[in-house]
Image (cartoon, rainbow, N blue to C red):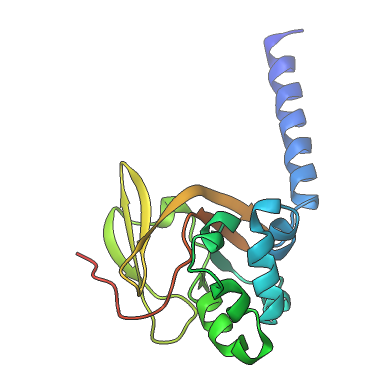
Length: 173
C-alpha cells in the first residue's frame, strides 16, 4: 500500500470510529447507572428526584463520589439521607457535586480557585497542581479527583474519593 493510500485509509477508519463513538454517547446518568462504582450515587440521585435533570441537555460537570466514599461517611448517614423526609438535605448534598458548565480537567486553572456548584450560595475550592486535582468542601475536608474527564453527551464526570459536604466556605489560598 502506498503511503498516501495508507494515510487516507487510516483517516477514514478514524473518522468511522469517531462517528460510532458519537452515536453511542450516553448522558451522565446513563454512564453512572452502567458503572457499579456509582450504585450509591445513583440511588441518592434517584431518591432526590434529580435523575431526569442530570439526564437533560446540560452542560454539567459532576464530581461523582464512588461507593467507598459514601461508605466512609459516619455510620447511618446514607440511610438517613435516603429517607423521604430528608429529601431536601440529600438534594443539597447532591447539588454541591454539580457545576452547570462543562468543565474538563484542562479547563481547571492551576492553583486554588473558588468554583460555584449548582447549590445556591455554596462554593468549592478546587486546586490543581502537578500532583493532581483536589476539592475542598464546606467541612474543611479534601476530595481527590481519582479519574478525570469521563465524557458524557451532556457534560463531564470527575470521579472523587470523598462525598463533598456543604458547610462553611472552604479556605482557598
